[in-house]
View: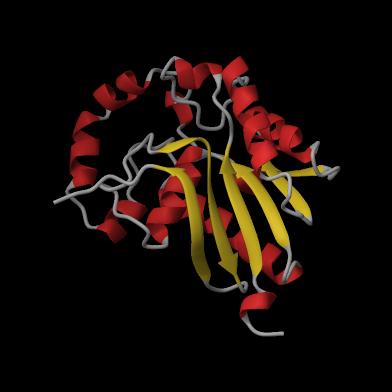
Length: 214
């Protein structure tokens, strides 16, 4: 068996549309239910994935991801395992507020962040209660690496959040921040990634809207 065949293949999916998505409210680690459209999005992705033989399904423990994962899992008769390490970035006191309120209150910090290098931005904390991308990716990537070592040559479905998928793609060098702005990962958009437990290789993206920059 060659090295490539030993790789664990991850299908990393963003949850379906939620009530707060529709209202442009910052969710973070607070819960918001799927809309009717969000349920339909999950059903459509379940049909797309029907012929893929998943060995395990893992989800963020937040309800929007659990619900999405359970709809997909019905096609595969697999019990969804939840884990807090797959949660969205934490936005603290800003969770439950409109995106525009968040941007207005932290305008100066956001402008400062946008002038930083990619590595500096990755570690930058917008406010005391807001998690850095470095912190979120530390948990997420460690979890994926552990799974890759436990499940070599297997296919694993991961249902997580838009901010996590975006940060992960930027971290892997798929795009810069300007090429992948907030909101560029569609609901039930997904990334297929191979890993040997150390390195990651992007195989496919779907519903990831990379912006062309000059």
